[in-house]
Length: 249
Image (cartoon, rainbow, N blue to C red; front, side, top):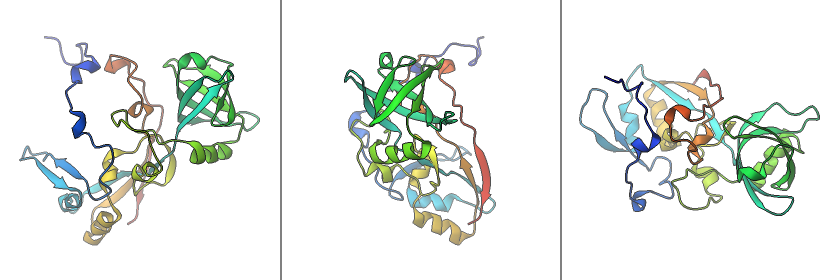
């Protein structure tokens, strides 16, 4: 018998019909969502209102949260001939010797991002330094990392999940930011954390439990880009490394 690990699976094996009219284009708001509770003991499943999550915590439980802040990492620009291009900055790299910001990025169309090619990204002169094995580009911007962050905050777009069929707007910069967000770098929100509101956090504090661990881990860009391979084994691996620390209430 061929084991599950040995057999060849395709991402399409996990496809299922999901009516578009059931996909919310906007979040209900922190503390106003609903979540499916699946007990580990196999008990009956329930749909809970977000504040009811607090009641599930017991003495000695540990709450692990992701404290990365979503950045408006999607930038638009054009080639020197006027063709429109798009970039999704996914990983900050060591700056160039002259202090220029460098980023690993997903791009489209790929043909516009050949090595050595110069482009205008959000008004900033940008050069393609390298093409990685998974197709990502290494881009060098003619500004410092601090200056590029200002450009992203001014011109950048929140990379919405591909199943949300609408353009992003200013409200998304808050809607897709969790209450735990502290350190910039994520290109996608840690979805589960979006259920939590400040009021829910206060309720947990009032209970005196649980203790909290903050995890700094940027989420992979595959959350915001269309799949480029049919095999789960060939999906690009995230190069980010998490760090954790215990945080006081």
